[in-house]
Image (cartoon, rainbow, N blue to C red):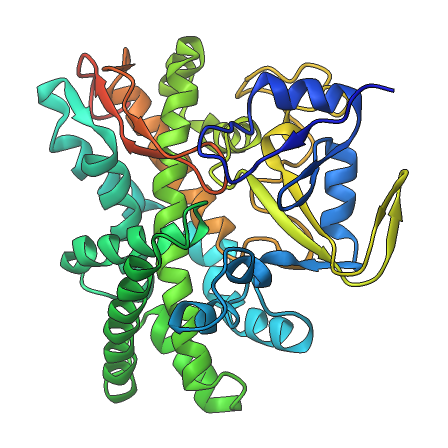
Length: 399
């Protein structure tokens, strides 16, 4: 029998999209890691994410990194990612109306106007630092619009969200002071917004959630605060990172970039394909709630599995031609998770990226990376820190 590799997911040099991972996938569907078993193939990954013998395993993330108490540990235990059962179902049900497809689809013109405004700010230069000049303000301002915050708040919200995003990184223990400072700042800011909406209701998400709390008493003020902080940071950080990864993927396939600029109707399909091959959430955690025997692997109760989303998404057994093609129709990718913990904000992310990417492709038709940029480790949550791009300006409208 071939030697079974062992992955160190906490090593900043480890790349979950590497040939080493693909070679391991060719041998068997899982490998051992320093944080449980890693699942490498699509069929088993998809099955585990929907298997009710597993729960969301993120609740133990602080503890796995030596963080056993304090502000971050307490907050992490209460976010949607960590809670289970009736509380999870109740809070998710109360948050759901604000994230329905119809509600988000109505915001497409606003997303398009924002994308064009940001591109207008740099397009004549023929160069852009994509993270700071587009991805971050775009993602942050959309969150401000959703929550009903003044759009001029976006730099501060982005700063807090960026620091809070480190809670998903592999250096969470070292980053704890920054994470807790951001958590405190964002919580105070949003708490003031809630107080204002109690006095002066508006047509925004905070008012909608506050009215749900007041009418049926099932969402406490504390739960509302925890949820809003999580929505603000998760929505901003993941969208910003995923936009950068989208550009990285598309620019490495110039024919696909050119096609997207010519056919904006492919925006939604491009998002699905990008998240299949280059997701910002590189692994999805689950914890066994009972002993599980699965295809020759015994996972004891409390055992942790990490679904490697890129490995599963490019598994040739599920995708006979796993190369990048924005016109292809594939089995559902796992970039937003699956099962009862499927990402609540997936319509927002899908819609804002589907709007932005064709506009960028049309207005930067020959875009190319200007140097290697600076990137987070390709493990945990990944994405660009800096991503400079050069291009010849294209037309603003489709003509």
